[in-house]
Length: 329
Image (spheres, rainbow, N blue to C red):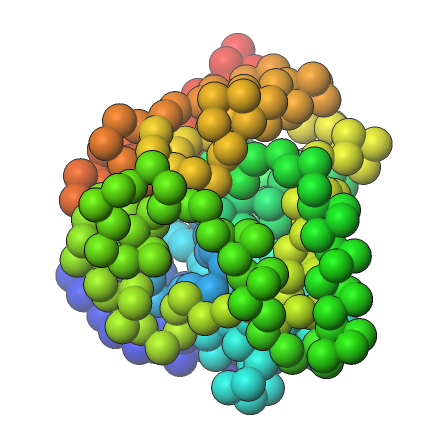
């Protein structure tokens, strides 16, 4: 099912490269596993499956994975289909293949199930940005397979998602699924810098940390325009994420944390933020918290003061163990 190659070792962690074959359509997925070094932490406490965002890649999460290893957690992350090294060709960056909105979620289900079978430990799920959509779509039928959920850089509700998806499909029909539409890209992100009058980059909304923005701009595996196929799948994910009828809500007492930068445009303002959190609560989940962090934008893991974000996420993960202990009493 998977092939491991040790990439790097340190006194605190072991980094391994991993290849998996998607059970959805046989696409090869490129992944990383980060494990605590035995000498540092003899018995890992759990596994954290990380789900990255749109137009980025898994390597950007290595510092956070090292932090998790230092605190006794194994972590796994894969490049989504159409991202990083999980492509058939370079032209497929931003192309999610057939029925990509289903495939991309199925790949995460596969990764969680792999983590459970490989390590026999509690599994925790983290999703950022587009990943915040994917993990909530995962939640709909698979919440019993995880012990906690962290939703970072939350994508808020968008009433135009249905229309956006149909428009992307129409453009793809006439221009081709690989066509990269400036119109669709501007429709999705054109207003994100509106509250940053001093913006030096179209990606300024990502981060207050200008070094992070520069690194993102210079990375060939970041910031590319999605294809029509990719935007169609993205809009379907936004719409499906807020469809209450699709949720089974079985593991209702698991800790769920929404955490975003206060200046992040993705959650669509205070109204969108509250709606996203209230939506999950109304499904029946009883331990749902939200944290908006002052002075941060979208990529909270990459802000200068990211250590406090790391600790918040770790706190939500470790809450799951306290819940289990109370249930045993």
